[in-house]
Every structure is written in C-alpha cells, then in structure tokens.
Image (cartoon, rainbow, N blue to C red; front, side, top):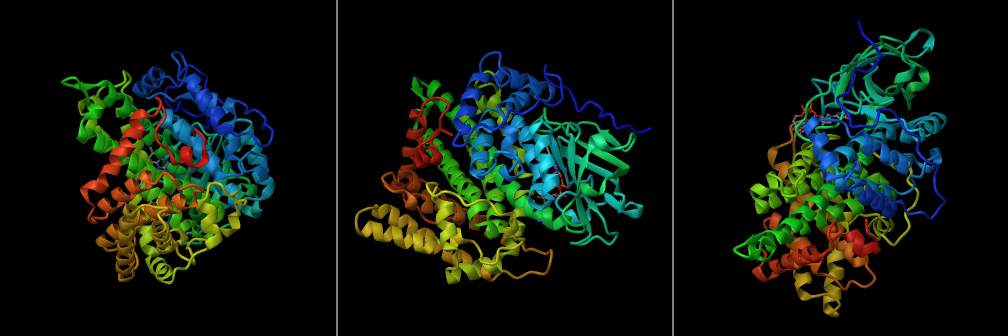
Length: 594
Ligand SMILES: Cc1cc2nc3c(=O)[nH]c(=O)nc-3n(C[C@H](O)[C@H](O)[C@H](O)COP(=O)(O)OP(=O)(O)OC[C@H]3O[C@@H](n4cnc5c(N)ncnc54)[C@H](O)[C@@H]3O)c2cc1C
C-alpha cells in the first residue's frame, strides 16, 4: 500500500521539520550580503546551528541541518530565490551568488539544501504562467521548499531517456504522472517538486513536459517517498527519491507548453549551472582560510609551515586558482543579465571550470596540509568534510564532462566568432565591469545555442592589445604584457584546433574534451583580464599576473621562474588577511566584504 505521508527523510537536528515564514522584504537599497555575513558570524558561535561542532555532529549522524536552514529562512534568504516581478527580492543574480557563497563558506550541506529551492523554482520563473509564478513566489515567501526532479535511477545526464510519464487526463482535467524519480536533493522534504516527464511516447526534444507538482494537492496513495540515500559528501542532505502512482495533477501544474519541457529545463540550467559556482567559491574560501590558519600555526623545526618556500608557492597557486574561479563566476553571473543569449557557452564554462578548479585547489591544499587535512586540523574535521562535500558540485546539474560536451557542440560557432572578433561589446562591458548597473534579466533572451559565440573570449585579442598599449605608456608592466601576449597566442592556436574538430552526432572524440578544458582556461584568463582593465585605477596587477601564470602553466605554455614569484605575492595576501577572509576580486573590485 502506498502513502503520501513522507517517510522520514532521515534524522534532523533539534528543530522540528517543517517550514518557517520568511520575513517581508526590507526597503530598497538594502544590501543583504553583509547582513547575512554578520548573522552567520553570530551563528557559528559555540551553541549556534552553524558552529563547527554542530555541523560536524550532524554530518556524522547524516542528519539534516534543519536549524541552520530555518535560520536562513528567518533571515529572509528565500526571498532572493524569487524574482521581483513575482513578489521576491531577486533583481540581480550577483547578489544571490554572494549570499549563497557566504553560506557555502560555512557549510556546503546547508547551502545545497537551502539553495535547492531556486533550482526547483527557476523553470516556473522563466516559462510559467505569471499567475502561477506569483503563487509560487508567495509559497516560497511562506517558507515552502521546492525541489527539481530530472534524474531517474537509470538515466541522469541524458534527459531524453527519461521514463517517468505524464498522460493527459480525459477532458483535459489534468495529467496523470507515473514512474520513479531518484537521487533528488530535497525531494522528500519538499512541498513542491518540478518534474520532467515524458508526454509523448516517442520522446524526442518535443516529447517531454515540465510539471510543478504540489504534494499537498495529491490524492492519498499517489506517491511513495523513497529512503534517504547515503552519500560520500553532503551526508546530512535529503538525497532520496519519489515514486508517482498515476498521480493526478491539475492542468495548471504544466509549466509552459506541453512538449517544451526539455527546452525549458535546458534554458533553466543555464542559470542554475551558473548559480552552482557560488557553492564552489564558498568552499574554496573555506579551504584557503583553513589552510592559512593551519600553515601559520604549525611549525617545522620552529619555522611556521607558511614560511617554507614550497608551501608559500602552493598557497599562492591555490589563491590564483580561486581568483580565476571567482573571475569566471563573477563575469558569468553578470552575463546572465548582460549576455543572456550567450549563456549556453558561459554557463557550460562556469559549471565545468569552477567546480573542477576548486576540486584542484582543495587537492593541492590537501597535499600541503598532509594528514592533518584529512584528520582534525580545526577540531571538527572541517577540511575533510568540505573536500567530501564539494565533490558533488561537479556532478549534479550537469557534470563537468556534460558541460564540456556542450562546449564541443558549439566549437564551430566559437572558433568562427573568435576569428572574426564577433562580440556584443556593450554586453561585454556590462558583464565585466562591476561598477556598471546590470540590466534586468530577460528570460526570453535565453537561447539553446549562442548565435554570436562568446564575447568574453572573442574580446581577448582586443584586451591584450589594450594591455600592450598600457605597457607602452608605462601604465602596465612589460611582464604583464608578455604574459598577456602568450595567452593570446595560445588562444589563437586553440581556436584553430577547435575549428578542425569534426565528429558524428554523439561521438565526440576524446581530444575535443581537452580542447574544451583549454577553452575554459582561456575564458577564465580573459574574464580576469577584462575585470582588471575595467578598474579605474588598475594599480594592482600582481594578482592578474599570478592568474595568467597559473593559466599559462595549465595550458602547457612556458613560464619563467621570476614570473612565478607573483604566486608568492598572493600567498602573502592570504597569510596577512584577517582570519576568515581570503583575497577576493569582489573585495578589491567592489570594496565590499562578501
Ligand atoms: C548528491 C546528489 C544530488 C543530486 N540532486 C539531484 C537533483 O536535485 N535533481 C536531479 O534531477 N538530479 C540530481 N542528482 C543526479 C545527478 O544530476 C546525476 O547523478 C547526474 O546528472 C549524472 O547522472 P547519472 O548518475 O545517471 O550518470 P550518467 O548520466 O550515466 O553519467 C555517467 C558518467 O558519464 C559522464 N557523461 C554523461 N554524459 C556524457 C557526455 N555527453 N559526454 C561525456 N561524458 C558524459 C558523466 O559525467 C558521468 O561521469 C543528484 C545526484 C547526487 C549524487
């Protein structure tokens, strides 16, 4: 016998499960980020739900961090998952990124559990009927949790293989959903779930539709929640599944037009894949902070580890990696507004590159920390936990490989666009200058393929020319000009190789994935270069040189020993930062503490 009463999604902490109302929006001009950072500082105290001890205990028990999520509800974070036009406070995606980064800096399990509501709701924001979207906005404002169920036990990345079906009820009285969705974040705890279902037996790109299923409106016996799945990381999260038994949902559950589900979700993924960057950046901040504290406090024969040349170099490379990830993330999230039609490229780069870069950075630091990284460097096993937790970011919402495949599919346009220097100059300025106000996001401008290519990379040659001009007038160093020149040559060669890739459908050759990785590196370096060029003062170029050193090294280009010394400058910036802070482009570019 089936039941609609959810089986326990696993243990939780002391707070009773359920929803808590989100407070009303504060007046305009309010910056939520410093307020949230302040609150998190308070809640990381001894007895707080974000304390290292509390989070470690929940992780050990695989228990859901309900108290921490409730504190975020009470702060009003869910308002930032709802666009202003649907009654929320979301009018700038970079704000949401900074908010989720702040939470991820403390704990990724909480961030993944709480932020999931945005992923669950986004399809309704971009394609739903306005009344339905406003109602969903109200529900989220009342504390409702929303999940998104695409994956099935035997089908993950390949959305067109899904077997869950939705059959239109007689007389158009709704839809009957049947089948199992599995390995879904928050699906048992959620009040509403966005479900991708096959609506045409033949399937295909127009054979699937999206439904916003309100669990409270289902008949008894219409669904069975499946048990929590034990996971390697984010152990406390509700990762489970749901089986639908001919569940009747009303007609207005359909999101957008019938048959348009795959197109809608692919466009929604352009936004959510970009949003995932926030979690990686927060994990990177946390890893660097722990590494800085550990290497400063631990000595080798009386010398702090942080003063050993090799350790400094590794710390510097890790900071450069995080700055490149941040440059990519910052530009990508601004591109949601400014270069919306290019998000098929930008989101694929962001989701493939940033989590992989942070995984690398964490691995690099783990070598430096040695066994202490895996044991108990801070008394709560935080480093080992974040290493485990972060692994999932590169897997869900499209793995790095899936996103690289999406880039390879667009190689012909990308290489053509680069060769011709085709770019949206105004959009590029807006995406790469944090001082320029962002235009409102227009979902209608999302496109499955970017017609123009990628303005960020196509604008690289002009940016390098500008650096050379600055160097000629002594407003930039020759060293920077030389690094930028090598980057340009590497990007030119890469685009020639990309143009030569040919393959039959679904038979991407292995070396194309390597080219995609090199493309991501060029994008990251171009993003950093554009951001630096937009700065009115451009005084501090050491961070940019260090980023270019790291990119050129990863591209296999020659880099001199003296040039690598810029990495040590970044290590010094990390080691002299106040505890809890790590060098950040947002700090220096916007003058704020994220
Ligand atoms: C903790 C956790 C939370 C999750 N939350 C959700 C959720 O909320 N909602 C949801 O719908 N799903 C969720 N998932 C599922 C997740 O998105 C899938 O696991 C993921 O899409 C991969 O699908 P799969 O496991 O079936 O692997 P497959 O799709 O079978 O892929 C197997 C391997 O092949 C690679 N691969 C696949 N396609 C290609 C390609 N075209 N080119 C190159 N390589 C490729 C993949 O990268 C992977 O390494 C979650 C998974 C986990 C572990």
